[in-house]
Length: 321
Image 1 (spheres, one colour):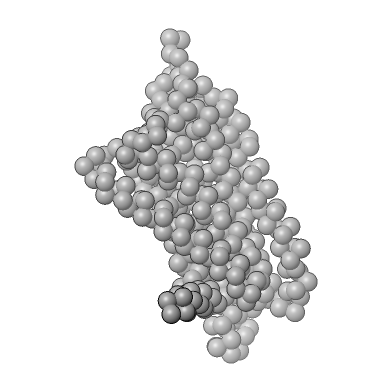
Image 2: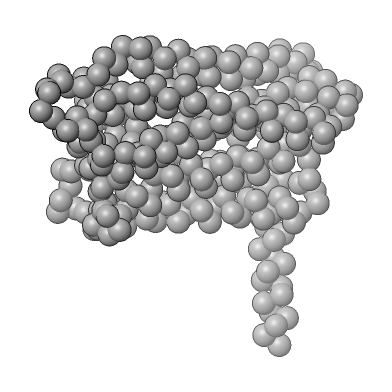
């Protein structure tokens, strides 16, 4: 928090520093992040298209996967294009309006919370499929899937309402330089000249509630899955059952590991650069890795991608004759 001075004016625009210490390597970083962003878009769009076109994947598990892929596209698009513009100084470069900054933070928090709830819904789907297979059709019907997905998006949308409202009540009177590559809560709080105690406490409690609620569902679901697998006598059957949730478990480990580190705390960590690296990991790297994990660790998705590519190749050969 910055001390208040009567002669300061209220901030109407922020400057996002981004990665200020990489002046000479800007073209390299721009190319790297642009490649990762485009790769993320292509991968997630491929998952959406393949699930939509392949009737073998029209099941609840892949219904939630398409929601996750849509979310990952929006999640990276909230921050990466503005960061790329900052590298090359295009379209206002590093500048962002006060309203734009709060909007970016709202959408980013909304999508991050929604991802937590979607991952919990996917864990519940795997729990019912493995532990209660005879009741799967009744408990995870298409109607139930739609209601569950809608609840995830609604809960995610409501998550940032109070934190962003409290942020909007703070006074920003200078400086206006955000030492990050997007409008995250911690660097914004460091610029406020108001008392941020209530805001920090609210952020901590809301983050903790979202993470604990979703991670509890995931932990209980996988605890029951492990218990069920231990009672399956056939090693082949155990491997087959576990293979259906291995990809999801890997994605959960990556996403929650970084989120627990970043957000369940009340003070800004001493190393700002380390915070940026961790933020890059969960906001850019993880959305890029998730489709790869699902396609490489899931035989059904790999098979569907293979069939789609084979069909495209066959059509290309037919067209060339």
